[in-house]
Image 1 (cartoon, helix red, strand yellow):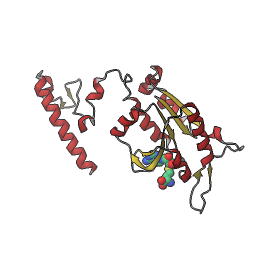
Image 2 (image 1 turned 90 degrees about the vertical axis):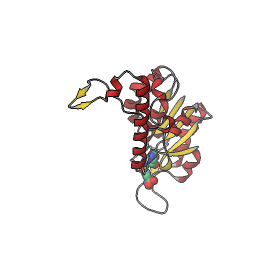
Image 3 (image 1 turned 45 degrees about the vertical axis):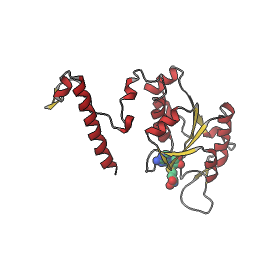
Image 4 (image 1 turned 135 degrees about the vertical axis):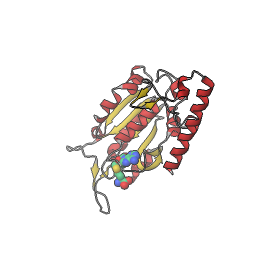
Amino acid sequence: MNIYIISIFPDMFESVFGQTIIKRAQDKKRVTIETIDLRNFTHDNHRTTDDYPYGGGAGMVMKPEPIYEAMDYVKSKDNNVHTILLSPGGTVFNQDKAKKLKDKPSLAFICGRYEGFDERIRYLADEEISIGRFVLSGGEIAAMVIVDAVVRLIPGVLGNSESLNEESFENNLIEYPQYTRPRVYRGMEVPEILISGNHQKIKEWRMKKSIEKTLKTEVEDG
Ligand code: SAH
């Protein structure tokens, strides 16, 4: 998969993409990530990417020209790119969406700043995605969240493929409780059943706990 990220803060991505699973995915050539500095597509001395809103009102609006030109550059490299606009009002991201995106050959993310985008920028997007109903100060962290969730699903990225089959949201269930050593820590004990060696009983216990956790989460989520 080829990933392109358009942002006025490309340096923000270095640390997150330069370590752990996302780094490994790039080293293994499963993913390429190109962060694109939006200011490279401006033509004035101040490298302006925002301007005052028509009709007045608070804050600044992202100008269409640099974003359109940055997308021209992306499309010159990858004509079929699936383009995502990060937006608090977009479709709320979840595991199903992550699974759908992992099958795309290439993704472009457009990160907003300031008060948001000139409305004409929306025509560039195949979809608008929100990482939740709250307002961040920019799309960069949202793009990182989505890239992380998607890249770990790409075949060959995670070492142990088992960990994908049993994790949360598979079968629409939250993952069962896990324990490791020590057997007793500050008075908290590992459930007896997990030490029993009875694999059938362990499986049943895990399924029961998984359902309990899922129901509790559904109640909390409303
Ligand atoms: N004034 C806008 C918010 C702008 S926040 C409004 O009321 O909708 C600036 C940018 O941060 C947005 O353009 C978007 O790219 C990003 N952003 C903010 N919250 C987000 C969220 N929950 N999910 C995804 N992107 C978000």
